[in-house]
Length: 151
Image (tube, rainbow, N blue to C red; front, side, top):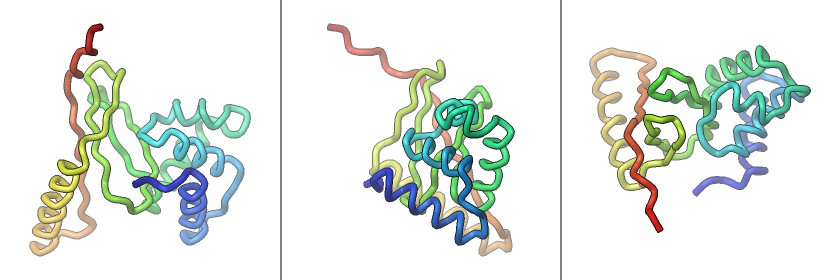
């Protein structure tokens, strides 16, 4: 279950403060847009939604780098290389399937996501047992979306 937008935004602001970052108007606009979207979005989408008068494109790039460094956002990729960002509030990982045309982004079902999370956690634990540190992973699915029902 996803937190209501106001709760998710408050939690994101608390994460900023706990990490020693100030809650500025541009950061608040960017976080508000990420929470509102509720799914991975490109820098350009975030910039447009946050309002070009509130922050410039460079500010969005810098904020995404800072947010990612403190674990506030998670990075994903379109198959064409476009980087997408989504708020990461410690909820269970959400995995997406992106259409090859770039017109559709769907979340995979909860059961598959839970099984995938367990497998990835086991793989990361195995790596740590072998001495690897700061482990992480990127998982994205790409597919041709099913045709819309006719009728």
